[in-house]
Image (cartoon, rainbow, N blue to C red; front, side, top):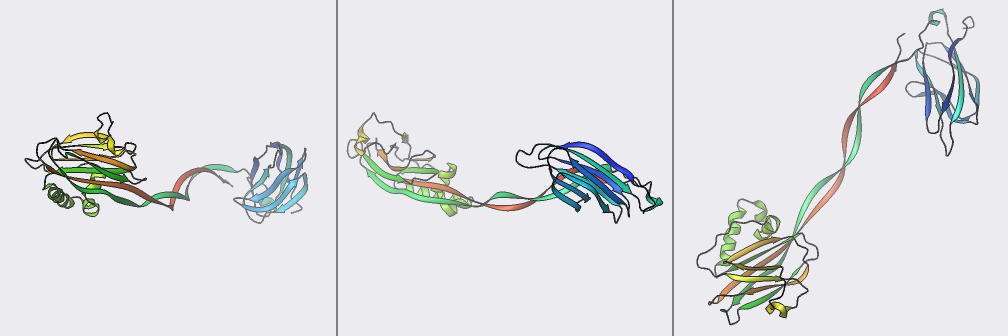
Amino acid sequence: MSQQKPLPLIESNFTVRNTNSEDYYFGLAEGDEVTFSVDVTDNTIKIVEFNEYPNTTMFSQTNVGSVENKTINITHKGIYYFHFHQSGFLAGRRNCTLKATRQPASEKTVNFNTTVFWKEKIDTVWYNEEEKYLIRVDTLVTPVADQAIKLKKKGKTDRSMIMFSLPEKHDYWSIWIGTGKNALTDFSNTEKQMATTFPYIKKYGLMTALALNGSASFVTPQGCLPVSYWILPNQHEKQQFNNDSIKYLANKKVACLDYARRSDTLTGINYLGVYNENKKKMDVFVKIVSVRVVENWGTRNIKKFKLETKQEPFLKD
């Protein structure tokens, strides 16, 4: 070893800015001795290291002002690098000087090519990502009204008021009104028929289906009598039913049956008024249901990957 003269490896003046790093790569042969000195001209630098690529540290010192003639023995051929890093609150930049020599072990490695070359490499990087997923959907059904009303002919006891209370939390509600003694039978038959095609009707009932989807295939019976109805919001008093100036939420005259899906924010106590404008008495049936759809969510870790292009060092010697 003593017969070989040290060969210059690097002599450089450079600046390391705060929270940044500077790295200098070299190829070294087995048996080389590397001797280096570092000088920080203003104050100290946070970290000075000499590493074997990719991540084996052979020398490390913190808060460095200077390093004098530090010698490291290289036990096998590979890529090595100096690493300078500056950090700290208001640490600022540091001006540094690096001098390094390489002393070959024999004449065979005197002409060893210390230049490091770079090539692009595509890596598959795996990582975990938290993902929300729907565990289940709960359909909460609240029967609000299921009532039969008898109305006398027009001019007699031809109107009636039903009080109903909607839950504070609901997404939709549905109303169905039918007239005639067979109205309930017709409703039941429609429900059974549609349940064979739509499983959720079999599970939750036709009124829930009306609240969620707003459609059904009812058959209107012949000869039934029409009824008028009003929906009054809760701020109106019951006696206002006879006041023609009231602004109703709904005001309809229906032929035998009517149904509707509503998604308004109506809650609490409200009123449904029905009125017989016919010269015959009639039976009226009313159904009201409210529905709340609650989504239950959970989280899970999903393993994903991404392709990253990075620079990889290599030697030509």
